[in-house]
Image (cartoon, rainbow, N blue to C red):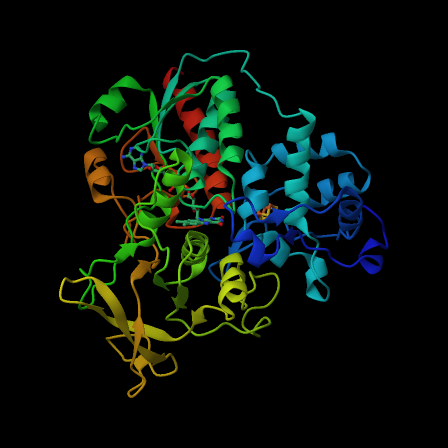
Length: 489
Ligand SMILES: Cc1cc2nc3c(=O)[nH]c(=O)nc-3n(C[C@H](O)[C@H](O)[C@H](O)COP(=O)(O)OP(=O)(O)OC[C@H]3O[C@@H](n4cnc5c(N)ncnc54)[C@H](O)[C@@H]3O)c2cc1C
Ligand code: SF4
């Protein structure tokens, strides 16, 4: 344990953020790291409790509690307190292939389950994780680990998001020859083209990809498996296949006026914005000088807000159909569950700094998009909803008569979640899907309905988190390895 009395002596210090009003003028990361002295104190706050919950990674009440990759959190907190940074990165890498991603973008369910969090502020676990890995890269401790022996077995991994990359890393380290297929022009899945640069700098993604390449993983970009190369060919060319294609089909809002020019899926907007920044081209969808409405919250909605503000939008509103969460845990949401509380994410803070107000309006349904004579979007109609009065057989809420409003809008981004992988891909491989249109495979053997074909990440569990994708990629690699080694046995 760090310092026996540390949790009584030191207050939690959060990772700093650059001031919202200033950071919206650029696309650089907004997080500012805590200095080493402060980190030592933060590590000392860990109580080394008899039964730590922070690293459990299980679902309680359908929400994640504890770290899904089972990071050895109390151990590295202690090492940081002792100043043993090199040992700390070894411990961290033993459970997490890419702590530089989770240390930046993970919502940190570990902190929601920290025992200190029962009656104090939890340990600042995520900041410590990021500091360990950033320092390790700065010191040159993270180098390519080229496997000494090869098994002669080949694996195709389809999709290069965090699930595919973690799976590729694990299988490559076991000596198999791994080829990752990606339909996009760059590797990384949503790490590259979903999460914007100010949250996760693309140089951080490229730095890890460079190591994976040096270690022997082959990457093939701009190959849409199922279309550019058939499923039969892939199965013939490789001893095993792991499908990590993500949940990429966006949920639509099929209301009158949907075809108005200016209504876009959030991912079309975000992908285009990052692509333009990386290639230094003009934005395909530019919010400059426009009134923007983002429908739907979560990371995706928030990223649309941050992106629109950086492009110089005139104003931004965020509509959420759900009610506003409470400020503190509700009685029905006790520790160590993930706290379902009102949070102000970076985009909300930036909108407040730029336009004077939090952009969110809760318990509002959008019922119609309005366009001009040329069908350019000019606004949308909304109505307030009451979740205490469900409409049986119709909706879990009812509309409140007399609360209709019209909002001005030149651009609308739909951030309403995702409905599994594309049906074309699923059909091409002849894979069975579950009731939520995700690929059927359990979290024990990850095997799909097609022998020798495994599935991991969002395409299996539905839209989720980077840290779950890494966990699934790691576990699927284990079963895929067993399968490969049993083939000759
Ligand atoms: C805008 C946005 C912001 C997010 N922010 C966060 C965050 O801050 N923190 C967090 O923890 N999670 C966040 N998430 C969720 C997180 O990004 C996902 O849970 C995670 O990326 C899933 O990883 P994956 O590897 O399963 O799939 P993905 O990252 O979606 O990768 C799948 C890859 O497969 C490729 N592919 C699909 N079909 C084919 C094919 N036929 N052939 C070849 N390649 C194919 C796709 O192009 C894609 O690159 C966010 C999600 C979005 C959309
Ligand atoms: S990966 Fe996420 S849950 Fe795990 S220790 Fe890091 S911040 Fe916490």
